[in-house]
Length: 219
Image (cartoon, rainbow, N blue to C red; front, side):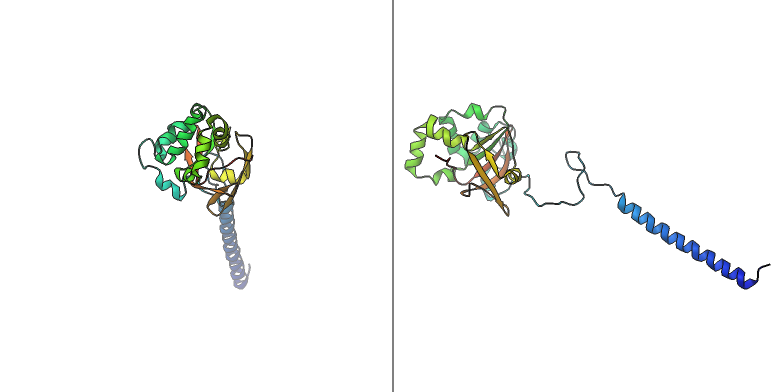
């Protein structure tokens, strides 16, 4: 028969092994929990990483110029989203000069077409920056100079938000010439001369970026 001292040592060893096994089991369970944590789901149903890897612009409306957009009615963000681009713009008082130009160039039906489009929409203040003689001159030539300018503000076949435009860097317009888009902080600039003052305005067939300076196509 084993001596009492041996029996005590055996019991101590057994207790030690049990405590060690319990600790290892706890660590394993913790590790398993960490390794099987489910990733988050993106809004489109696809698997997304649990932490963002890049910092991008919001897909929502942004910019100081958004304050000029009505808060309700057909010209509001919600209202404009229900109508195609030309109709939506006609309901927004901040774009009345652009609407007059589009009407003069007879491009309304085109912009109300199926799209999709990305549209750089000069605000009334953007048109006001043009010398009166220049504005009067292009308005007097609706199917020539005016159409060339307006089609330089439209990208066909894509409805791009501001971050997507910045990521692309350049895009070809309906005019045939390209625009260059750059991002600096929360500012999106086009051709280094015009900035988005109210971004990601949705219409039924387009994404509209309201800009502060009229873009002039290369001659």
